[in-house]
Amino acid sequence: MRSRAISEPERWAASGPARMLIKALALLRRVPFELGLLRSSAVVFVGNALARLLGFLFYVSAARLLTPADYGTLAYALAILDTAAILLNNAPGGLARFLARNVHDRGRQEHFYTNWVAVTGLTLLCSVVILIPFIPVARLTTWLAVGVVINLTNIAVFETYLQTQRGLGRFTIMGAYYTLSNLLQLVAILIAGVLGWRSAPLFLILYGFSAMAAVVLIRLVSPTPLGLRFRTINWRQIVRIGRYIAPLVVQGVFYAFWWGADLILINRLLSATATGNYAAAKTLTQVLMLAPTALSLAASPRLSRLSEAALRKQVFHLLGLAAAAILPAAAALALLQVLVTQVVYGPKYSHVLDAFNALIVGVVLFGFYLVLSSVWGSLGRPLVGAVATAVGTVTTVALAFLLIPQMGLLGGGVAFAAGAGAQLASVVAFTAWGLYSGVTARYGHLPDEAMFVEGRASAVSATGSGT
Image (cartoon, rainbow, N blue to C red; front, side):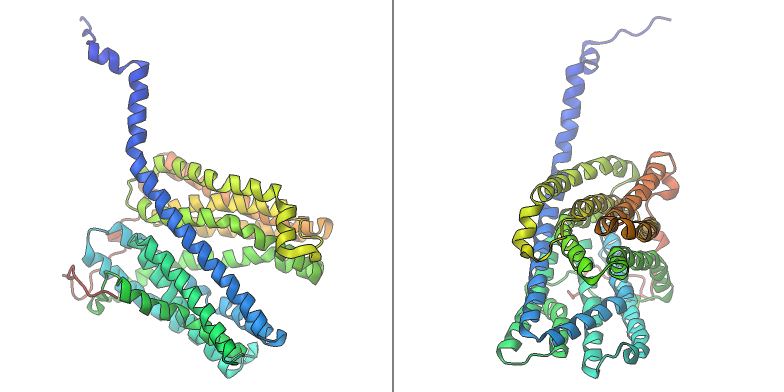
């Protein structure tokens, strides 16, 4: 049987220049996606950076306006708040994914939105109920306790609003809201200070109304295009959402413990002065988290709409963007560490550089982990991040006990970096297995049908009042 003759067009298509042209066209087709992702990431980055700066100014201003004892009371109440808000911080987690997945179905978006608000409300109620018995144990005064409860409500509003805007792809509104919330709390205590009203409970209460006030102001300019449809609330849906966010809550608990474990153990095993030097160094290195955080927040809604095949290709692009954002900044901070620490802290912290390089390595590794774990968040598999964070926590705690007595602050930095590396290694291993070993059908996207339960009003209007 004679073979078919190869035509001239086919011969040219198989040539080297043709293959290069095809690859170039494929890259060009990706440009709109990459540019859109970079624009969204830049907006989130600027919003987060400005909001964090305003938050920093809040603490500085509060310290200057209050007496040291009052400022200590405020810091203590905020520490209690951080503990009481562990459940609330992650209650709206996942809402952004389901809003992004149903971008062309307003009825289903409002169904998820309404039921997620109900879950967050129930979580707020549980958090307050759990807090009440601990108020005497924590030695909170009546007004401090009131301030903590107001702040819990504030957190519920803040996290729900951010997740909603993120899921709708409204990153400019998201950044403006975050910035406005922190600006309002700063302006509020400055006005109170000028009027002579200076107390820890008052500043705590003003802090707690910031996000709620910002929602009201933002709504006047740009209402959220989703309505609350209370008829769609369904207890089966609430239970499914509760099961979905459970790993996120667990991850939040492990993350809080991992992030602070090195500092706590340095305080216990060394001294308060060593803790201050280590905390100063760790605070500076946190600036490296801004870029990967912005990238993961901006990428997740887009990733949630991709097929498994397209998602596999996108993983390497995300890691490349992360490397371009993280590595140059880390290198600059490492090279300029002496100058930077002198400018920020002066000569007071003589051991601030003992663990500085180790902390930089740890934050860089954690930045890559954030980006890669966002892939599994977009797939609706929050358990991956929870397991990875648990592995990192165990690694950091075990090594900190061994290394801090022998190596001092450097031992704490190495333990922190090892924990970050363990988290990254865990999620890399799971990604290689789940996305590149032929089991994506089992570990790919969580189908919307697995989470969607029809409410009493099955036909939800696609047009609703803004909230």
